[in-house]
Image 1: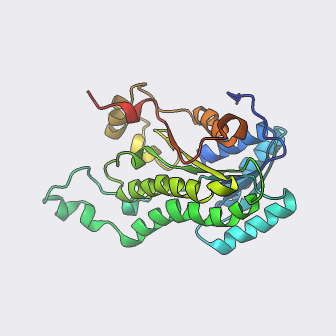
Image 2: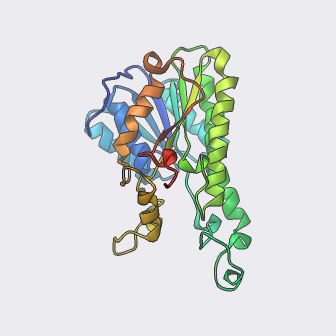
Length: 281
């Protein structure tokens, strides 16, 4: 991987949740390449420790920690270990999130006949909806409560949340995920104001469409051919392609570097190939 910007995070401790996944493991690698000590958190122990080991093999400083972002005790336990290994957190990336099939409708539009043979809005599972909302929203709020305390009284500290295109305009079929990401954008603005007097900046990135393990079944059939949803996405993205994970690094580095973005606070930046700017006409 090649970094798009020459920015150093040497001396910084970067904590990244959801670091066993495609996007956040890439963020972890990028920060390590830029000199940071990277604490990688994920509920999947094997995934996060494997990703951390790969970074170390390439000369970076990273360590994987098992952590459930929905349990404050688990976060505090990880925090204690990170303090022992790396020291206090300077930058927090709240990357844990995702959707669940129990909170997804089968079709985009409701038709009365669907009540007999499909999962409609009326069939959405309460626990599934709660899980999706909690994973995305509470899974960002709770780690912030734990790690933002490390930032009090320091300069150059940042919190980055991961929002989504859903936050601007809800996508069909995934109401819980859309609502949760809208909450993340609002929470980002609230937190930016709340911490403004002590110098902790809070911003968010809203990725457009990137292929990950969580969405690939919605985007591609088992034989690898694109689904109808993929055709809709690409026809609504002026650049007519999915994003590459590395194309998020420049925005991330810009937001986390106080010299580059010291007066940027409370923004949600789309990285979407023009999706949010396109009206469809």
